Length: 297
Image 1 (spheres, one colour):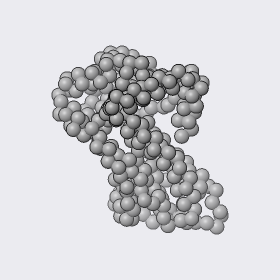
Image 2: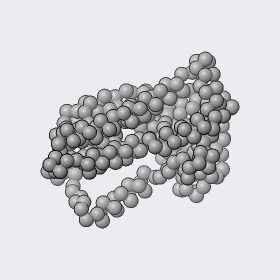
Image 3: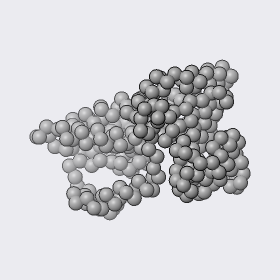
Image 4: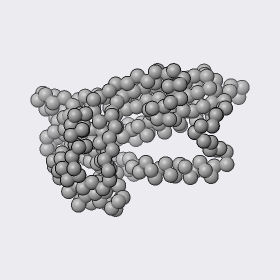
């Protein structure tokens, strides 16, 4: 995937090319349903995994809670989930385009919206996108109330037809946007991972990556534990929490800062951020550094 990031002005943009950044790909984009099917198949055929029903009691030395941001078990444990409500909603849908995407992802930062088009090959190969459009609650409600033709017109106005003529290929979904973190990520015999532990704004597309990094960190901590230390030992699990605290906090600050920067619509701030986009785009070493940081996050 290559990427084009557009600001408020025509000359305020950054282009990231995998070839120019000397990497095989800037990102890998996959359909959540496809990923879940593959994971389900892997679990069903794994000899060391037992799948139980949702209502069945669980007795384990260590329980890893990966239930998402609305985790019922986290709530039952009495763990606070500290939230910052952005007053925005994300609208998601699958789109088709008259223009081949050629593996290009698009993102527009135009106060107060953030709109992303991610390239897919379904329902039409080379002509499909996944839409994630972050807007203030009232504006999101207006767009969700529109008939498909009206929504498509609003979409074309927001993208200025830069990604081709876009049409809805699915129903629209929406959810509130927030930043959140659990007050504790572990305790005796339990640990939180993924959205059950932390939630960031989707503008950087790092939510799943943060969760996968949580899993990798927990596996590493367990694999390196002392032979005498049980899996559910709280001191052991605190090593995981400490290892994940800094990168998760940094990503939360980055996404929160970018959102607030691009939500501000005063002329001075708009001019500053547009000049900043153009400056970064002209500095290839800086773009390579940013790419390396993103790929290693």
